[in-house]
Length: 95
Image (cartoon, rainbow, N blue to C red; front, side, top):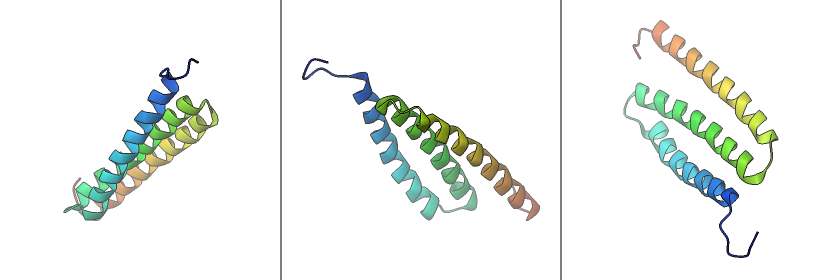
């Protein structure tokens, strides 16, 4: 690569940094959300955001094992969303 040239890996790492900033803002919504539904949605978005960050890091750093972690985390995030939804509906709440 020529010095001063922009690499696609830099783009991936920059996008990952942007998603990290967005995750921090969503964490605020998860903690301070006015309703349970806001908090639940924020936690779900945080999980999805984490998967995207891991995928971007895998592409930006050329480390394919990050994709394995992202896939496992996506499956756990899905199971968590289903479990919390089932628990909330059984308690009498409506999502």
